[in-house]
Length: 408
Image 1 (cartoon, rainbow, N blue to C red):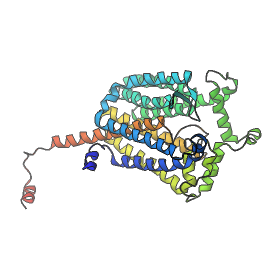
Image 2: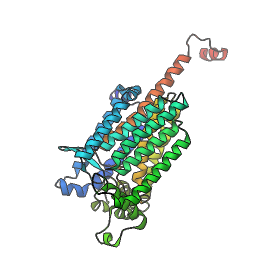
Image 3: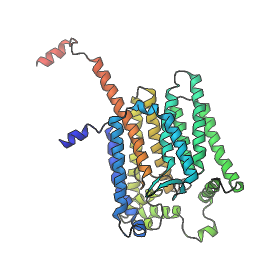
Image 4: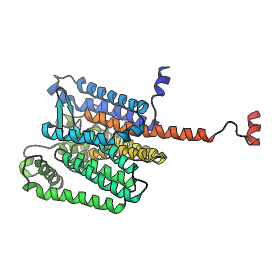
């Protein structure tokens, strides 16, 4: 009876629900393993503290998704998109002025025992706002061009602010908006020029960073340059003398994992990595579960992308289509960045692995992204069902073969 009552609230694509549950199981296992040293340093050896905290936030996330699916229609997100963007800009500004730098996560606003990362609000706000502008300007190519410039202005301002604290989050928002505009039929020449401008901006930052004042957030650009140089040329001699860096430990963890891994809970590298449970959690997954475990996690996100594409193709309205596109890409790109950093493909940056890495704010806002996609899936399925019901009439005369079959 309880299962039946719960089932009516679990709406949307069932495969995505299965992926969510599987990611939860992986998260709890790896977070418990990778926070052991942290528990002894900060919680007096209480190793269950962080896994309990992770479970609480994920339950809050599940609750958020269920509320979104059952009580909030998709069109509501269209109405609040402008407000959401404004709120995100305000929070990011507050973070820059009053926030403190977290461990590889950018600026964080602290409220007593709770902390809040303003960049997470921007990830959801950008998806809502860009989806709204694209949906409301599809009828006329001229309107679509105007929408493009509006999007670039809004995204540009928000990314410029976030870049002062967290370059990777700014890049993530930029790429997400670009892909949404591609799906939204913005001319390719505009998107190409925008992508080129983004690449040129990174080049300018790289060469100008040593000459910029190390105040007002501009010192972050020098950090970006140093990470790019370290990724390309390796550690300098004077830096290497200080010991191994986190990306070095990540490579060692992957090497130790091999094909089958060292076993669940048997990670040793996590004891030496400050962000083993967050930015580099994928390397710990490979250490404990090997290449097999790493491929399995990557496959889950690939299946998520596939199911998201199916949901998008089934949409028959513009706003849900773009909303689902943004929700899929913000999660997938973040996962790709985390896995690429852990495996040494790109320079070190701070992005958690969605729904797996330890965290509070990131868990809740990742849940909102999942909730947006599942809401679109649920309403699309309902629209298809209503269309089928409207096209069927019980008074319609059945063909002779159908009547005979019914009589038999």
